[in-house]
Image 1 (cartoon, helix red, strand yellow):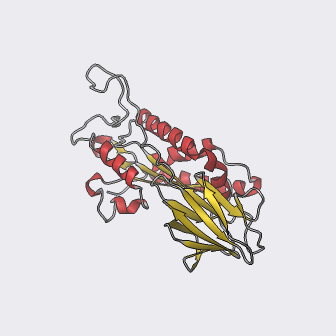
Image 2 (cartoon, one colour):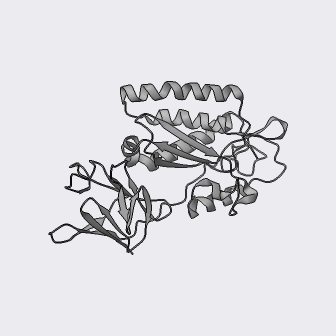
Image 3 (cartoon, one colour):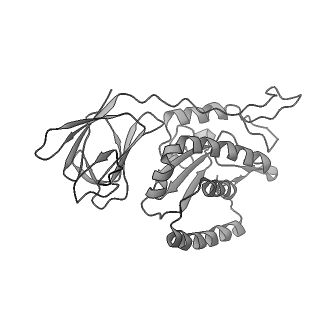
Amino acid sequence: MKTRQNPLQRVESMLQRMVERPFASIFHSKLQPAQVLRRLERAMEDNAHLLGEGRRLAPEVYDIYLSFKDHQQLNPIEATLLKDWQQHLIEFARQHRYTLRAAPILRLHPRSDLRPGEVSIEARVIDKHNIGQDGDGGIAATQAISAEQLERIRNQMSFSQPGVSNPGMIPGYMTGGASNPNAGGYSPTLPPTPIMPPSWLTIRLPQSPEKVYRIEKPAIKIGRQLDNDIIVEDKRVSRYHAQIKFESNGQFTIYDLGSTNGITVNGTPHLRQHTLRSGDRFTIGSYDFYFERR
C-alpha cells in the first residue's frame, strides 16, 4: 500500500525545507518542542494513506531525527516529550477524522548530517497483516521496533476490526457515548519503562590504574568537555564524543555524537552506533572501556 500524497503538499514540504535550512544555520537557535510537534502534524498529514470512501489512515510509527546538539538538549526530558507528542497526535487525528489503528510510537534519534534547528521525520503506516514478517510494509521496515513497542501495536490493532465505518475511530482513544462500551473516555497508556539493570564501565587509562564507573542514569556522555559524565583527556577526542543510552527495549546503545575519529567497538573502528552486550569493549581516544551488565 503506497502513500498518495497531494502534489501541493509535496511542493509545500519542499519549500519549507528550503526556508528552514538557511535560517537554522544562521541563527543556531535552540530547537523548541513546539517546532517538532508542528513537523509531526505535517508528517501525519503527508504520510496518511488513502482508504475507501475518502477515509485516510494515519501512520503509527514516527522516527524523529535531530542534530546531535538538539538531541542532547532534549534528551533529559525525552520521555515526557514523547508522551505529550503522542497524546497530541491522537487528538490531531481525531480532529481531522483520520483512522489511527494504534497509539503512535515515537522515537528520537541523533543524525550527523542535520544542523541545529533542523528536524527530519519519517512516518510509516504498518501493515497489520505483515506484523512480525519481513518484506515491504512489514515490521522489518520500521528500523528495529522494540519488543515492547511491537507488542503494544499488536494489542492495539486487535481492536481494529474489518468493516469499521467511522473514519474517526481511534482504538485506545474512544470518546464517551451511550452506544460505546468504552464510554467515559480511555487514553492509551505506554508500557512501563524497563528497570535499568546494574551496569558499569571499567576504564583503562594509559599507564594508570583502571577505574570503575557505575552507570546509574539512562544517558551518560563521554568527551573532553568538563560537563561530560566521563571526561576523556585526549586531544583526539571531541568535546562531546559519545553517549551511552538505556533504551526502552532494555538494551544499552552507544552513539557517536558526530566526532572526528569515531568509536572502536570490539576491534571495529569508526562505528557510529552499537548495541552494547555484556563483555563488549570499546575505545575512545587512548581510553579503553569494558562494559558489563547483569
